[in-house]
Length: 211
Image (cartoon, rainbow, N blue to C red; front, side, top):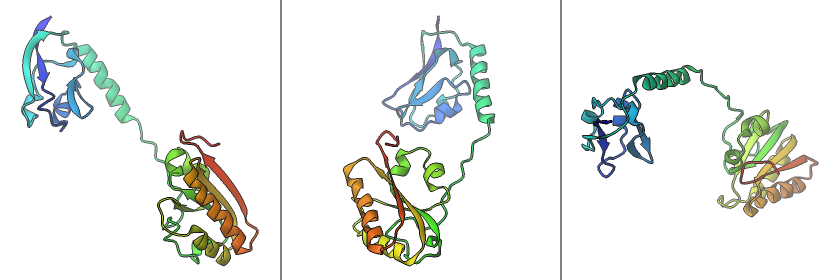
């Protein structure tokens, strides 16, 4: 049918999103940083979005468009209300101490004594979705990047192993070659400390899976 409906000039649109918020029917959405009329049948043609646009990117035009569907709009708004009403799932952090950077921790910090230690290449926490629950839980966590940190991890870790009773060490590293540096530093430090500490190496691929 031929009817009056909004038109959005993407060249003028600055991506502020005010029109999408003003549209009570959810006919407008932000797509790739620009406002877009996503459903003709959601637009009632009243133009609540026009006065909030700071760049005058929205005007009316008369063209062939689907008729305004009030029932479809109400169903859509009902679905959105149900989603908002759902309780948020809160996931507790498993971090037990601060700081976490290898280069910042003191070798004789109290949290090291009689602990299970996780030494993680920092990319692993981003690659593996369940990192807190599977690796950090009940462990003291240290992180670092052997490629970017200009420090000798082996020296710092040797001091930590020498001055504390470490029950076990878990190393999480990425499959990429540069992560081999953190694995090598841990093994070298355990040997230099003169202690027999159980060490597990876990390698994570770039798709977030454990190898």
